Image (tube, rainbow, N blue to C red; front, side, top):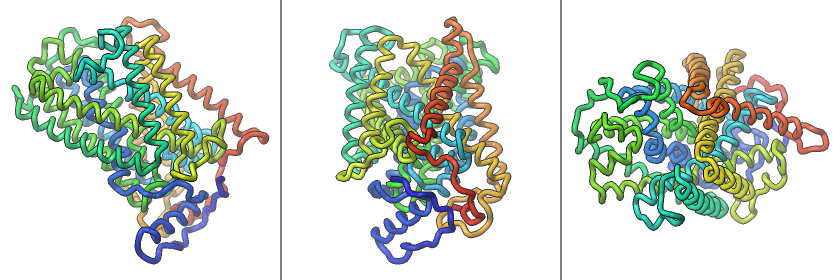
Length: 526
């Protein structure tokens, strides 16, 4: 059960001594000062924390999936949308790293949001992220259909057409995706040690694959890096060759570079979280940003043709197989499939910890069950099962209407970035009132120092611009409701969320701490 929040200055009990036991005691005392007792097993180090954020982004998965969007709308110049989005998301990540260091509690944006914006805004940050994560689990799992049948035809278990747009392909995608979600659920139920081991191995394989793939594509380049300065397009770019096309192309990096806050969801399972969590968040963003930029550049330099239309329809898989040959190309596709599996695991893990954190505060329906921790594995099992079941339900939508599933996943990206905006906007308001203060911060707290206000303003401005670009309706021959689906989806999610929030405030229902007591000047630093 949740203890009342104590907002007094830290007393550093348990900081003396050496070894893991002393560190665990210090971390548990630190958590108690933030209002919770240690229930989860604190086993994770810096590698596992980094892996949680990096594998959620998973550039090997998402760049393979989404390259076609960028090139179809922006041609070769879409490369420049990547560094723009990267710098904007880096500003967001810097702010999340700072607030995550001050509040190293499971649940990431929910815990951060409710402490900088008590009440509905803070709660909604967690709700929007939770819904976005559940949909993202399904979106990641379904990517197996775009990879495994290309590696071996035996993975096409239903029918003969592997295309996601066909009935056979959609049905097989549900089968493969559901199998993967069942596997990741089982790993999460086994405990944080099993999850971390699988995630660490997978991330090392993905990082190695990214480095080798970039090197191989550069070795097979047929043109120089100046290609990104030339306005080369495939046949008939949907929105022309002007600014409208580049804004649409920017959706590609926007759909890739999010989820880096997931390291914060594992704060109660990470040793020295005030020090490790902010570093993990920033390392995940920087590694993804630099690796993704080099991968895009290498692909454009190695593509057999930039004008035959295949880059805008077949994407990076076409470049890999054409440049490296079918055998080596399939080896890299196997690595991509592994990255998909680890990505799905990381998203589900983050979502389950977020659900656990909200339920522990009585902020979700069925809170007692969702907040229960397994006495054997010290892991919240029910949230992992619930997230897995909901994700499998989302997979079925793809079988009935593939285009609707695409629109839902686009909305999920919008929801996650909106949750970030709620946190950074709340931080900005607190910052204008003096947060985080001057001296007396706990040891190891990450601080932006004098640059904090400027970076916070930049993060909020960027968040507004990014959300507007993602939500902006773009005509493509669809019906009006499909054109406005992201906006409709966000409005619906907010409406349901506010209803849930209101229900959890009823005296007869579960209690949720959304208005912490007035903080002293010392507590503003913790």
